[in-house]
Length: 281
Image (cartoon, rainbow, N blue to C red; front, side):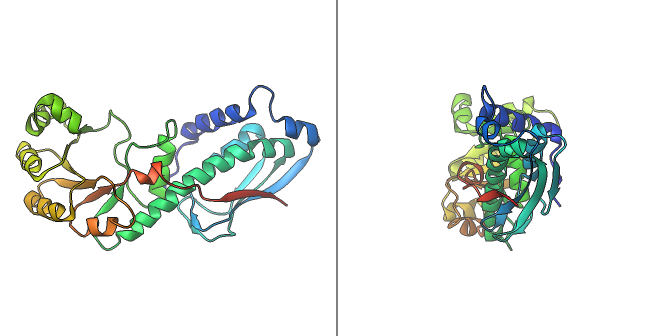
């Protein structure tokens, strides 16, 4: 079971999306066409197979506009569902439900798309030692939700931001004058609970990094051959992360080189929305 995000984290995102959609005058279509006291019962349903994430977003969107609405989940985040599966049933004020519909579906579909793509990557490396992880290539404002969706898909989270781990990239190395010097500076700065990772783009840089003693080395756009060599060089002394241009077609081969982690930006920046609808009745 996936540990849910607190409503406190989700609600501001949902309310900002609702405010964007309602604009200056509210849902004038619902106001024009629907009686103020009309009620509606509807179901959220998956129109394609996939892995679900974001049901709490849909619930909070509905409750923000009708606090008295009844929202009953029929599935759980992390569930793999078939096309046609009813995910939730909702009953409430008709104007409110229809005004919340697009925000609820946008977030639920987006997060379920991330979870669905993630589950495909996780399945592709099953049986190897490699674990799939995301990156910081997330939609601005949606990072906590999208990283939650990655967990719903069965993968791990990389760092959440610039403040929870040190990740030395190529431009940091250039500014410091070398991989070893960058790692030494990071080690001198970091507290005892802060991990230090360094990106390298060659076996020569890897050797320099290993001598400096980081916790993790990111192997950026290494060939399969060089990934295998890198695994042998590291000999279990550090965690090795493969990164750069990973696809569903290549991820299995990368995993079989023996790396520990494969980071995939596509999980969040290239996931397609899962088709989910809200249907009355």
